Amino acid sequence: MKVLVIGGGAREHALCRSLSLDPDVTALHCAPGNAGIAEVAELHPVDAMDGAAVARLATELEARLVVVGPEAPLVAGVADAVRDAGIACFGPSAEAARLEGSKAFAKAVMAAAGVPTGRSYVCTTPEEIDRALDAFGAPFVVKDDGLAAGKGVVVTDDLAAAREHALACGRVVIEEFLDGPEVSLFAITDGRTVLPLRPAQDFKRALDGDEGPNTGGMGAYSPLPWADPKLVDEVMETVLQPTVDELRRRGTPFSGLLYAGLAITGRGVRVIEFNARFGDPETQVVLARLRTPLAGVLLAAAEGRLADLPELVWRDDAAVTVVVASHNYPGTPRTGDPIEGLADVVAQDAPHAYVLHAGTRLADDGSTVLSAGGRVLSVTATGKDLGQARERAYAAVDRIRLDGSQHRTDIACEAAEA
Ligand code: AMP
Ligand code: GLY
Image (cartoon, rainbow, N blue to C red; front, side, top):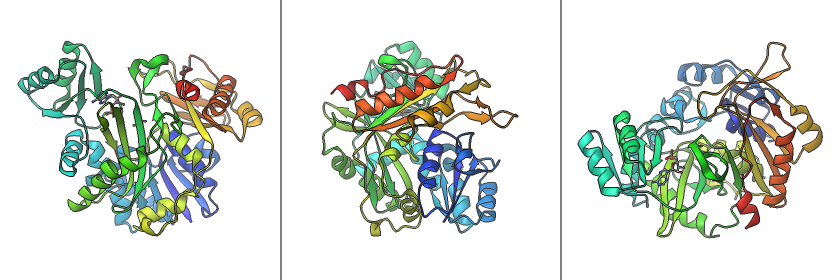
């Protein structure tokens, strides 16, 4: 089948890599893509946010399946535009994607479905904000209601900083602080049947030891040796299935990837957030472990046939990914620097370690790869356990040269020693 992937980050590179290894995929296209995706898919300079343009491209390419990677096009209705053109699309409708697009909507769905999450207030006035901050006390958790590319959430002990962020947001969700390790659990769903993937953990802070500002994610690993083996079953029963059922009941079924960001608190599992798409960088490690060819699973979800699918098959391997970011990320990143050493990773580390591109582009010479964003590369490796996957990932990171770049050195470190 012919497949078109929309987006151009490391998540889309991971999706394209898996799809390119799937014998059922006869042609793979991506828009807009990046320098790494260009090695496995044909790129098209189409704006991911333009639903009509995406639908036109999919029609021209005779795509059997379109996969929309990032949240912004989903919230903007790009999956609806593709489906309206009669083409199967993996990704929720704009209405269902509000689960990610509006934190207040997500809270309302969770309340209706009885899904465990932190207590919260939706506030729009300074008086409401002060009352909510006062009710919870420090540490304060203040979330912009809308999409903010990972920058809408402030967690702080500083009341003045919490208040300032809340006032800047307009509509804001102020929430109880949830203490405990975080887990990302993805599920593929067709709006009725829910197929959980393997849990992963993301490292959101910029610096080692979970210091520094929040980022889009600096690394991830899977499996989680420290987690309760019953975690997936529990989250299926208390979170994923009830949420999917509630959205169907409302007449806005959610089909695509439902991402539950969870806190494992002393009082049990709580949802921190929902996302309406594959997470980045967790996708890199989850897909590295999936043996079942991907295209058939995504197509079955898009066509409402998940119940007929055989169980997913997983490798025993562990996987680790380390994000290499530009100088100054998550602030305004420096871009346009040449990246060297990519061929060395292919020569010396494949197939166990490989580089997935995030913010990269080809220079005009057609061969030099340049940095083009905050998160530049996601260096991914598999191994018999997390220790080996970690060693392989960092060996590959060490071969890469990008002036001023930064990465965390402690991805999966604690879990590997557990
Ligand atoms: P989000 O954009 O909702 O994923 O939030 C970004 C990060 O902020 C999360 O990964 C958590 O580390 C942190 N966070 C969000 N909500 C809470 C909460 N209620 N309690 C503690 N930390 C939180
Ligand atoms: N890994 C966090 C996210 O994708 O939102």
